[in-house]
Picture 1: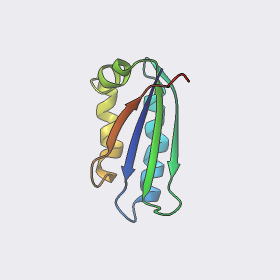
Picture 2: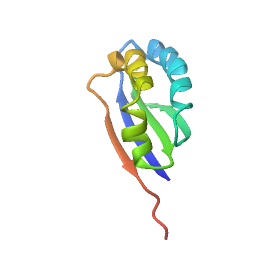
Picture 3: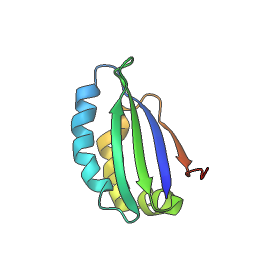
Length: 97
């Protein structure tokens, strides 16, 4: 399992619009192969900052399956104009201790 972590900086004053658009966009990602679950968190100290966590079966499910799909084009259309700057996205695997 892979955890995608995206730090989202939203244009100030556009938080409500972003949240409304994300409500629609999450329906897209939920349909993707390899998708497990996601969470969206809003920063308490800086209300225009969000953290998106998405669990995927494999990194290819995100990088290839989602990002190279026609559904991703709709995702981009709904959300990308809210970002400033464009999000940093990293992938993590669990450490067994």
